[in-house]
Image (cartoon, rainbow, N blue to C red; front, side):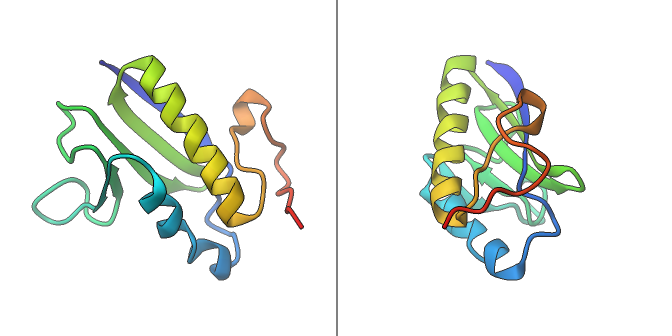
Length: 113
């Protein structure tokens, strides 16, 4: 397993009605566990697969530049999971979700009608 990271264009300044759909996106993904608590993981952060960083896990944090993911898993599985997340998020949030750093999306949100 390897440490994996990515930053998606899901920003803190999106409208509340969009943010309210984010948990639905999280729950659609394989391995969804819920949010960290005082006793497991980082309190309030979403987790998939495990709360233990020594095992296969994915977690996310909202940063000023977007939704930052951190994972410990095999690269091929990570790429597949990340690709599926972008697809599900795009469908539910109604804008193209991707990685700005990889040129998948621009800085401006592209809403889907």
